[in-house]
Length: 360
Image 1: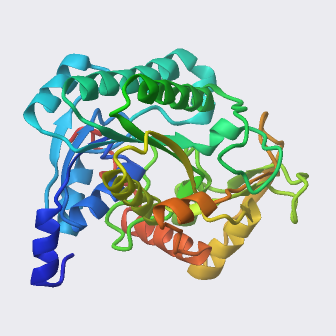
Image 2: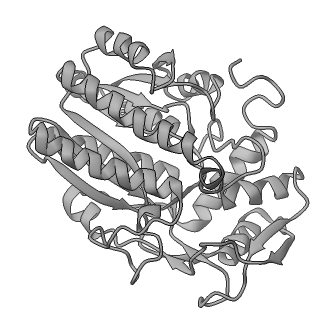
């Protein structure tokens, strides 16, 4: 929160009106907290298909400010136009979309519709209502099997699943948009592996059903929801045979979005940029398990199983562009990520509302 009168005055002068799609989700909610804490006005649009309305209450509890909230599907043009008519937005931060790799293989039609049409609707409305800047939530999945690590932004596209393919197509679409509409600026932020939670333990990652990501599976084993962790493969060419990934604290990731907003505000002619957000360091599955046990005192039983199709050995980011261009770099280490993840899970053993409806 702001601590001085001069800071308050400065932030009121520089207030931005920002639309955050998917702002009730894991990364979106943490970004909304950071935006509100620095004094920006935030409007969330979310269909709650993978999130909870109670997140808005918790954002208010953390920040003392309540973002405006609209329940809508981003693909619904008429619903979104009502929002654009009501507000004079300075920026759009676009998180909304389907996001599970495995599900995307099973339901490619759902992923192509949700993830592509939502971006199309936003760009149509941005052009119509003179909104000039968008930060797009992309993914390291666009790289697929990297030729070399650390992975730089100019590495070739090679996604291996429909989810990654929708991110790639969105990036190509947005690049074409900036060529056709020179007054629109785009930054595509390619995330690596976000984990952790807000230090308060009030908001965090609350997957529906069986977690698709490693950390919530670990914390659910630790809390007793699941019996053991499945480790997919121990014969990769890594230091312990398990897959290596670039884990980044979700709050660091959220702050990367603020840095991107500030960059476009200072450089409105930036046009189109792609920037990695990671730590630049890889940790294996067992590194994460051992670190979690070290900081919590809880042993995580695990079973080695077969590799999953398409899994790669090592993936971590070259983050020099983010540092050079945005002045941003990740601050939190793996121990902090584990501590904050466990604080969230232990304070919320059944997530946001246990057995209640997602829309309650």
